[in-house]
Image (tube, rainbow, N blue to C red; front, side, top):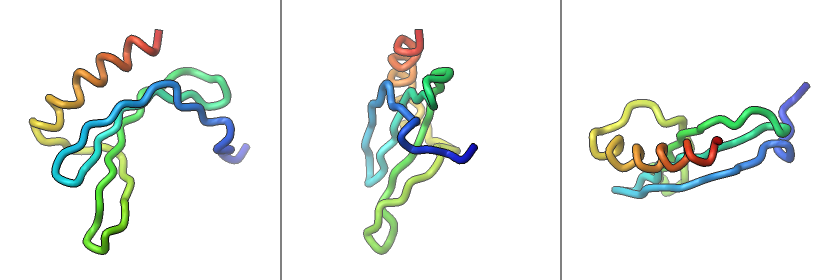
Length: 78
């Protein structure tokens, strides 16, 4: 079954911004399935275009900023 964007629901989303990057913690559910936490990074590239990426490696400041958002998200997964 191919991915259908209309079945992908965002149940919670909060972001933190710093130095042109936005880190977002969200809870998503596909087709009313299991709630899952998603971490993403949005940044502006050299051409001024917005670029989306999975949130891989993080600085200490980023981790400290995202942890409270993750804890809040956990409460929304109950």
